[in-house]
Image 1 (tube, rainbow, N blue to C red):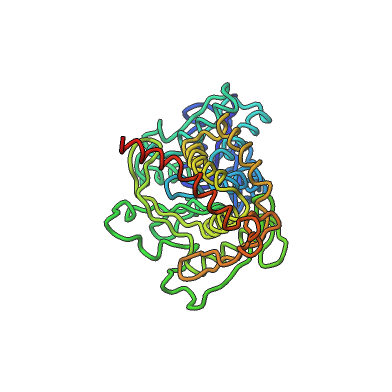
Image 2 (image 1 turned 45 degrees about the vertical axis):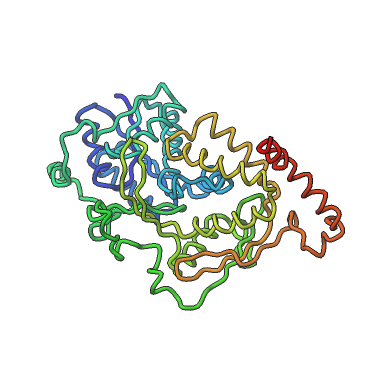
Length: 394
């Protein structure tokens, strides 16, 4: 019997996909669940998968790999898509990579996922899987089944005596959370003329209710990546967790935007990314001190290109690898300490220092830029404009 590796999150859709794949494709289903920092209980997910009929349940804590292989390059590049910091999009190539790895280990011929037929993730996962293992066949049950409503899917589960999963839902809200941030889904958010209800946010406090006193945090960077917080060296995962709590307390990291989706239409999206937001602000502040003007200008444009690679599912492309080579080089000297002030939804750089600083205090550079040097520079700089002025008069 052919084997199929199913990306299993514990959602209702992934739960019923296990018997559905058996009934409609005659697969032995092996599930794969990964923890990317979303408070995932891997043991529970494994038990749920086996109860639903999986022949095996693979579970992996991938938080460190997620930071090293995916968050780190995005942070080095300060990649973004429009104003979105890419939390959900960034997780998909890792899921695809692990699906392929497990499929090869298990001798599977198929992989499966339950991405929405209206969403971007179906494209991202398919593109990534195809790039890594074009021989694998991909099955997307929601495109095939006739279970179009939540009620139909719940009834399908009851008919097979499957316990309805404990969804990652609070009230009417559904969350996609990982170490880099979370997206928030709900029918009420489909109307952009109304502000998101305060209750939908779980990582950040309302800035109005945030502390009335600012709080400063000192972030140490080495080679463009954070290695310490408030004078203490820390591993990546606990550093981000601690920074997430600090920034969230001050109402930092909310994003409410109209997003141009990969699949071609606009959507109203609500995100939270407290730690990612502060790290972007801090690293940008350190870059201003350690990178030249020309490098910063090029970096800014390529950050947009990098963001499109992530958002559009092109992680495993030559372009993304080439961009990584550029960012690895320019981040060699992005080392130092940045102090960021957290206050009422804002993160502001208030101090920075680096042994690789390109900044010189006016007194330190007085001899290098004398009055004579200034006069000569201004004359040469103005020569193209002088030539244009003469042409206009001729």
